[in-house]
Image (tube, rainbow, N blue to C red):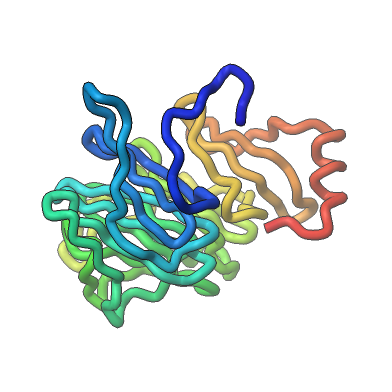
Length: 241
């Protein structure tokens, strides 16, 4: 419970791993279930859509076809809900390799292949299908990619020591291209720390000298917004992830 807030519905499973609103419906991953929560004139009600094996580190993205994708880096699995039919399916395409998160850019689902420099995309407006050739490597630095986020129609790829920005160039072979002049010499120290706030992106980062710095992106410049006390506390943790 949070001060100043009140419960509006109780689901039969817990814990809640993530939730997102799409077209007036709240979708919730709770325990091993995916639930749909609706607010009507008679109040809030829920229904179980199906069982999922997602647990921790769940991220959610939707596309223009009415699909909602639920991804877990912990189980390395993802599920897609067709909100037009309430059909829930697990992604089983052989060109799906898991990802630290899922996001959406101009019709494509975006993913990062774990422990690599590669990121890849789904087919246009279909989270369930993939072309094995629809990938690219972020080679600004030999570090592996940690995570990513889509912000203002740009794909921000966070490596261990560097960060780059990609955009939809419309190239026939692969639609995303790296934006020249947007390379940043700061990487991400914790994949789950990346978040959008105040019309920009914040993340827990590192550079070649130190880690545990809280950054805010000012266009293509990472600015440190943490102080020495916060940084000391972060670096006192047994691990940062």
